[in-house]
Structure formats: C-alpha cells, structure tokens
Image (cartoon, helix red, strand yellow):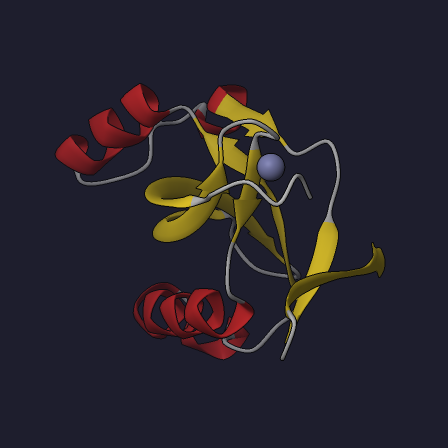
Amino acid sequence: MCRGNTFKRKFPLMIMVEDGPALSLGLTCKYCARCEFIIAHSHELEAELCTAFEKIAPAKTGNDYHVVGVMDKKVWKKGLKAGSPSGNAMDAVIFFKQYLTLEFSPGGWGYRGDQ
Ligand SMILES: [Zn+2]
C-alpha cells in the first residue's frame, strides 16, 4: 500500500482448512517491512496445500481454507525438527489483523477491496 519495495521472505503460514486439519506451511511470500504486509500468491499457496493434503488428508484436498496468521518461526522450526507440529501450535500463531485482495493489472499490483 505504501508502494515501497517488497522483498521475498519465507513465512510459516498457519492455515485452517474447512472440515480438515490445520497446518503450517512454509511459503516464500513478498513482504513489506514498513506496512508489515505479506503478499502470497493464491496459486502458489494452493499448489503447496494440495501437495500437503495429498499426504495427510487426501479426502480434504480442495476444501475451502483460510490463512489465519503466521507461526512463530522458532516454534515452527522446533516442530520441523521433531517431525510433527508441536501440540500448542496455535499458541504460537500471530494472527493477521487485516486481509486485502490484490490483483495484477498492467499498471501493477492493485487493491481490490477488503474481504
Ligand atoms: Zn508497504
């Protein structure tokens, strides 16, 4: 929104899937440090989600989902090392305050409205 430069950074996104398990997914997003704004491409996110769900809950692949926040990186890494998410993963989630939908147009990324 500030039209400043964004840079790429990997975020452990916490995703709630309708009628399915919650999961954390490491995804490289664009990030604006000034606005604390994370931009994820829905097609990249959905591709990762499909891959994950084919392993853990194939019947739930394609269900509606909601990205609720970002997990604390330290907790997330601990979970990765242990091979499974830690029990209180939700306690380590920093929930998003606002969602915006951006669409690419020839003029650049644009703001379409609140969801
Ligand atoms: Zn910004």
